[in-house]
Length: 293
Image (cartoon, rainbow, N blue to C red; front, side, top):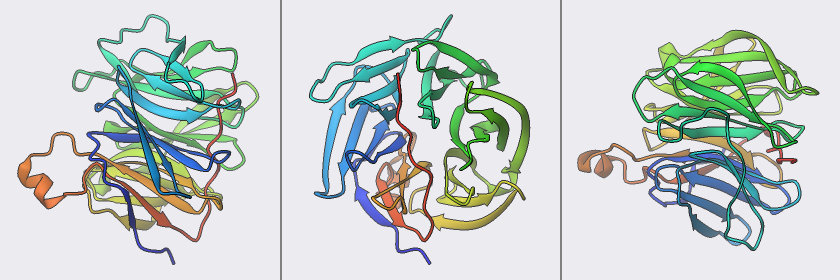
């Protein structure tokens, strides 16, 4: 049995997203994409810090040698500990930051940073999934995307899972960890029955997928081998955006939410929209991997 859902931070994010757990520093990072903020939560003290960014920021990951790397509107940036300056590492080739922005992303076990984009304009299929390699080169891994969103890897790192939200399908690829290449795309979960769009995602140690429901008030657990839903966590917010395992035992699921586009009546019904939540589970997650570059 899992414990009760706990409110961690009522920060009223417009689009809370991109959570990642920093095991070395025992803290959680997450962003407000449109609010242009990076948050850090320290569970030992319950302290929360906030950093403003000049550009839209899609996701954040810890760096192997300290600091963080973020996917901003126009590319990948690094920030060292104790320094408020962001340094551009690389941007995608032939990329228009006035048409696209980065969205969700995370690192694979070898420290490559995968992150995808979405268009500022509705229903464009010109977004892409990119990979920032260890040598700081950026390559396009997948095209014809509408809203690049959740991704994750199986515990043995042989499969990469991926979400393009409006398509309401969860894809799997064969994953070559040595080269970082993907192949053999197939659908493993049909999400059309859920009355919501799949958003962010994480993977547990048993290989099950935990998927945030944008418009659905929940995070659900799925068996990708069977394509079936096996558990659900109700969330008191309709726009659930992403989730990640954290805590010293990696058995605490942190959940981000959004309030963008909600009117006064909706916010009265969902006063915690945009908050960060946590629930302790009886299953552990795969680690958040750090960027090595």
